[in-house]
Image 1 (spheres, rainbow, N blue to C red):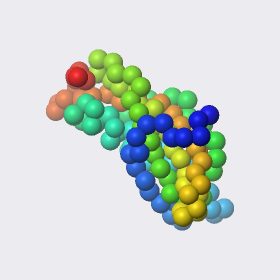
Image 2: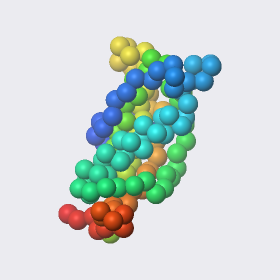
Image 3: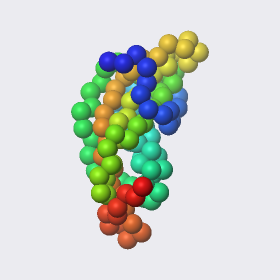
Image 4: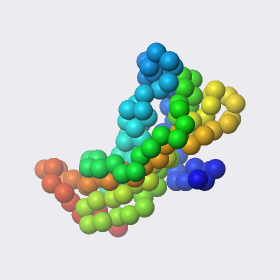
Amino acid sequence: MSDQPQGELTIRTLAMPADSNPAGDIFGGWVMSQMDVAGGICAHERAGCRTVTVAVDRMSFIEPVNIGDVLCVYTKIINIGNTSMDVQVEAWAQKHFHSGSRLKVTEAVFKFVALDDDGHPTPVTD
């Protein structure tokens, strides 16, 4: 596992109490949602049109995210097909906001499909 994020910083957001369970652990679904948003931004910028998530592959949680951590999500396109793209998405937590220490908390490959104005798959062009 790399000790440095791979890809471009796409989203930074603060983990808040409303995003946690009673023990103060941030819900995995919240983290995954932030990753999906970041991957969607990356895919949309590359495709230049609407994109939708069609699959998530190989996601496992490595470290917990706690209230007050800054979640940093990095994205990198790793494959472009005819109408789809695979985006490597990494989530890192900057612990205790000002400490500067950060840990990779999860990663996954998100697959996005480019859509035309009528909602049909459309080619991803160069």
